[in-house]
Picture 1 (cartoon, rainbow, N blue to C red):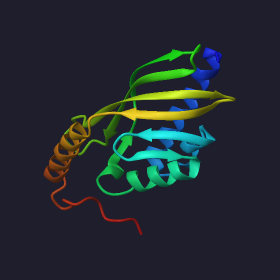
Picture 2: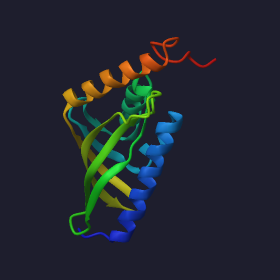
Picture 3: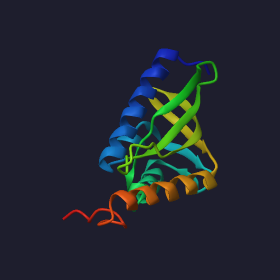
Length: 159
C-alpha cells in the first residue's frame, strides 16, 4: 500500500525527536508511542518483541544500566523512504556522550521502519554487528576512566 512521503517524513521526525527525548531522559514511552500498539520489533541480538509494552520494557531495561546509560544520541547518517512500499531504511548511530576527550564513540546499525499510517510505525528491525558495539563500549570506558579517575565505574547514582 502506497503512503504519502511527506506524512512518512513527519512521522520519522517525531520518531527521531522521541528517541532524542528517550536518550536524554531515560523516558522511552514517547518513542514507543510512535509505533502502533501491536508493533513488531526485531532486534537481532535481543530477539523479537510484540506490542508497545514489551518494546518499552526491553528498551528501558537495556538503556538504563551503566555504561549504556551514557549512549544518549541517535543521529542518522542517511535514510531513504520508499513510500510505495511504506518503508524507511537507513543507518543510525548509537552515540555515547563525550567521556572528556572530545572523541566520538558510536556504533552504527541499519534500521528498517515499516509505516502503518496515521503517523505511526508498524514495525522496526535493527541489524548490526554486536562485536563492533563491544569495541565501542570498551574504548569509551577506557576514555571515561582516563578522564574520570574518581568515577571509574560511572557517576554516582542519583538520590
